[in-house]
Image (cartoon, rainbow, N blue to C red):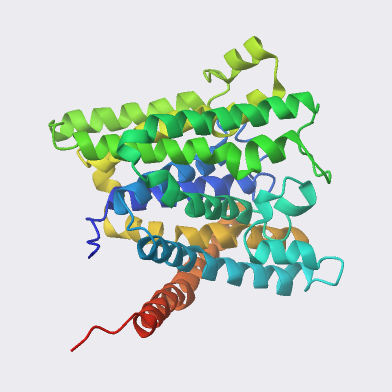
Length: 382
């Protein structure tokens, strides 16, 4: 069967850039004049949760069904080609510029990073090793592996899969409490953070929520008719919703903590369990493309930044660590100039990685898989 790629949702591509930028600024706390605790009232790292919801939405929109066998294989090749090339470059850069290449004792950690399975191992010495942000890509790879099973008959089974993924997260929270695990603060071994924040099973609810949101959106998008003024007001409301859910002052996290007295439950809520609902609403509204905000996100410079946002995400902490290791590098520069130089260099490096390596490598991997499939498929009689 021929697979027709649906129209690209440009506003959601633009949204990816602002989500990635949010994480960059969160990790810049303590540098370039950004004080530690600057994001105490709004945890900007919640953008990771938005990425998980957005991933489920986009994959369901692009792949509403998969042909058994070859369709699943093509899907996995396409997703591998999407994330692994930039990940490989970032991993090699970390080794060249920061850590050196692994010795025999470190080889296990390096291999788990190379294969993007480090987040599946709930031990502190694994999931943040080498390029720490790649833990979320490892979690995404898990989503890619289970997506063909989730999308099967999804229109009839979505509620059970959504509830099931939520129950799995609750199970991990209960396990953390029974084992009396504490929050990760750099220690090796098992932690509540490893189970309820890092591990893919704890984040599958957010991904499945994105899938369910896409299913709803595809069913009702043509029935919802409103003008640009109403569309803009709804988009502003969606932004306000996600900010309110992320804010410690308004978040249901406080209610959960007071009811359960569970630090692990509060951690899961803070790191995405609450804001994923706002993320789903925001993605649904922006995908409609009815307001000025979605129109602004869809202009070509923002879309381009969205296209390079994955490379930006993979490179940003390498740049931060290089600056931290060389504190005199910008010592004589005004703060605004040092930050501008850093951010400009980061965006330029991400654009170069995307243009010269990420895009060509993705095309090469997909094309090689097509050539191999044609070469090994049975020949039709003439």
